Every structure is written in structure tokens, then in C-alpha cells.
Image (cartoon, rainbow, N blue to C red; front, top):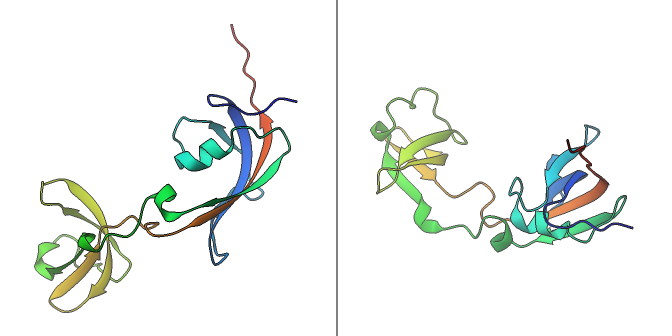
Length: 148
């Protein structure tokens, strides 16, 4: 029986959820996801955990926050005057994603977490920062390609 190795292309089905069981994403009844292990299409620790699996095998993988995108960083939360986001302020609401510039002039995505008549609080942490994730995964099969 063949075991998956780095560089293998496999077809997988998976469900990803938070620790409380709420689902983030799933392949569900859709076609399996084609993935080359180690290519970096998904979270590295998740891809690496596929190594050693065989066709038809199912596995539950628990990833700590530092294995996903890291812990939440308070310094990435800022309160700004509303006029700083002039192009975006008409449709602005809590939960909106906005583009802002960091101290180096780089574009950064942030989420609006609080909004008043004059100020907006934004959080530039990745939405999964500080979150542990659980993946229920099944390796359906190895993808074989014909070589010319």
C-alpha cells in the first residue's frame, strides 16, 4: 500500500472547523480537492500532516493558532478618524473589509470592528489569527498523470 509523500498529488475531501465545532469550509459533496503536498496551496502544517496517509484513510488534524496564522497582535488594531477612509465610508459598516496603508506605505486588508460618526476601529489581524483549527480529512486517491 502506497503512503503519501511530499510532492505527491492527491485528491482529498475535508472539513475545517473552529474548536467550537462551527464549520469554516468543506469540500462537502463537491468534487474532491486536488492538492500537491508541500506546494503551499493550504496551511503548511495541514499539508505536511497528509504525509504517510494511504488511499481511503481518514484522519482528524488539530492545529494550534501558531501553526495556522499565529496569535492575534493587539498592535494591528487601530482607531482612525473616519475621513482617513474617504472612498470607502459610504458603505462602511462593522465587518466591512477595507484597504489601508501601513507605516511603510504597503496596502493592508483590515476589518472594521467599531464605527462611530467620527472614528473607525480597524483590525489588520488575519481573520484566523488566534484560532485553533480542526481538519477532518480523507485521502481519496493519488492523482496519476500520464507522462509523454
